[in-house]
Image (cartoon, rainbow over all chains, first blue to last red):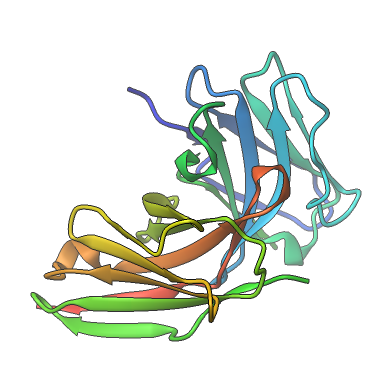
Length: 115
Length: 111
């Protein structure tokens, strides 16, 4: 079946511009996560959606970052007034409610470069 | 804060040999650990997991060992193949099921 998809795969933007990154989770997965991976680093948790519960936004690095999940499916991560330090790979993962955290399935990521 | 880290940044291994990747964790309350493999240009891929009530778990060519006394986790890959070349991350489950990842360990398989 289809896995987690993300778009765009690559994004180059100028400092100060806003960007939107999209994640399509696996159908039926109720949990959705966003992570950020800087070059040569591990993954940094950003935000977590679970069903209709309030999202866990505790990992967002600043108020320039926001995310929403519409209809319990597709999610959009928005970065406003991008800075060069926002350059990274943004990864989305989804999980089913019974699978436990070990079954987080990751998308291929969006590579963001802020010039 | 709590952290998960890896001992070695790069491991070069001859094809056919066994690989061992180590990981130290600091949160003694962690009850669930996962190993992920990430190939260049791809997202992390789940390899194997282990709960804290176990000290060993085996998969296909992979074994994860957990030593809670010294808060150490390792991944063993048997008969390493060129396709095993990747970055390997250990991760522990935190609150809200978020994962705390280590920095990663590059494995290079020499043909």
